[in-house]
Amino acid sequence: MFRKIISAFLIAVLLATLSSCALLRSVDESASVDTTEKITEENKTEGANVTESDTEPPETSPMYSVPVKRPGDPFTVCIDPGHGYVDPGSTSDHLGGKWEREIVREYAEKLKSELEAEGVRVIMLWDEDVYVTAAEVAEAAKAAGVKFAEEKLVDDRRFAAYNRSVWANVLHRETYIDAFVSLHVNTYTADESVWGTRIYYCTETENEAASGKLCTSISGAIGNSLPSQKVRYYADKAEDAYVVTKVPEMASVLVEIGFVTNEAEAKNILDEKWSDSFVDGLCRGILACKS
Ligand SMILES: [Zn+2]
Image (cartoon, rainbow, N blue to C red; front, top):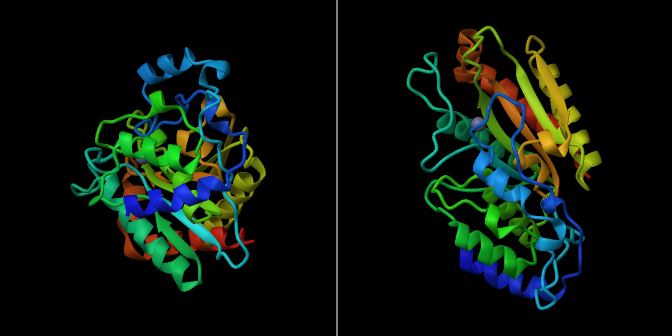
C-alpha cells in the first residue's frame, strides 16, 4: 500500500502549488483529561525552539501541494481509531479487561459500515497489521508535498498523534478527505461521577469553519440519537487543542465517546444497542456535513 501511495504522490507533486498550513504551530498539550494522544512535554519543548523561519524549506525543496477534490469524488471520511500498536489507550475496572484500543476499533468498524451503507467512501487511517514508521511517514509526506516538521514525528511504535495527522494529510492527497474523525474513550479517575460525550475541534486552522460545523453537527445528532446522553463540544484554540484536530488539513474532530471511569457510562459504551445508537448519531452528524 505504501509503495502505491508513494508512486501516486510523485505524480501528484507535479501539480503541486504552494500552500500555507497550520503545521508550524507548536504541537502541545491540551487541557483535556485524556492525554495519551498528546505530544509529550519533551517534544513540546523541542518544538518551542523551532521558529517559523527555521522551518521554512530551503529553495530546493519540492513545493507543497494542495489537496484537490476532483469532480465526481465521493464524500470521503477518514476514521482514526485512537491509540493502537504498543499503545492500548485507557481502561478502567468497569470494562471487564477491555482497553480503549479495542473499544474504539469496534466503534470505528461500525461507523465505517454505516457510512458505506450511505454511499460514503471511508478510509480507516491505520491498521494493526501495518505499522507506518516515522521514516515512512516523512518519506511519503515529502513525496506528496505535505508540509510537516520532521522533528515532531515520533518513532515509538505507537503511531503518535502527530504521525497519524501527517499521515492523514498524505492520504488526503491521494484520496480527497472531507472529514477526519478520531475516536476515543475518556477517563477521569479523580472523580468517577464525571460522564458524557465530548467532541473537540480547533478554531485556529484554515478548516475552522468546516471543523466547527462537523463538531456541532455530530454533537446535535448524537443528542438526537441518544436523548439521555450528555453531549458537549469544545472549540479549542491551537495552544489547547488536540494534535489530531489542528494538524489535519481537512475538517477534523476528536470524539471522546464517554468516560470509562464512570461505571454506568462504561456499561453503556460496552452495550451493543447503546453503541449502535451512538454510531448512528455520529453517522447522521457526519452525513449532515456532506457537500
Ligand atoms: Zn484516547
